[in-house]
Image 1: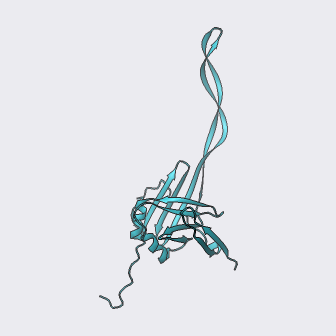
Image 2: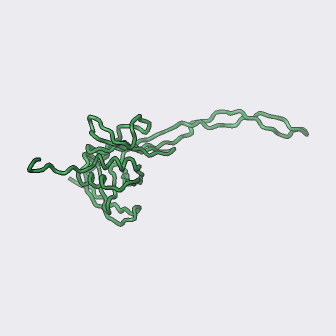
Length: 200
């Protein structure tokens, strides 16, 4: 089976770390988020459902995009939606103006073409997410969150953090995660100690 090797240089975070990993194309994908930015859910707070157990929803948005994600031990889900408007036609708009004609001012009406806009959107999910914690870069590309990444997420200091989304064309986007979600990770991804071999 042929593997695809990717060498990422994480310079935006002030590091010169070469990250080399091999993944088959079919296994390399992050599941789309199960909620939208307008969903009526608690954001940046630990919640629980029968499918994912403990999880937290996070969103970051502006006028032209929204990044929505959910985080649980069962998996990380994320959707990036872009918004824009296209001109699909024009309509005639009548306006008035005051002009000087025949030695006096008069009001006249004139037509002015006015563009008709149609809102568009496109959603996609990254093929991988990169995390920086304690000087190391961690990669998530689908499935359950492994113990090493769980420990890294739970150990992040309080406050906002930055994650890096890797797209299917190998371009990247750095996205902020809010302090409330980072705090929730400490509960969701806390590594439980192994049970005692000797009981109580």
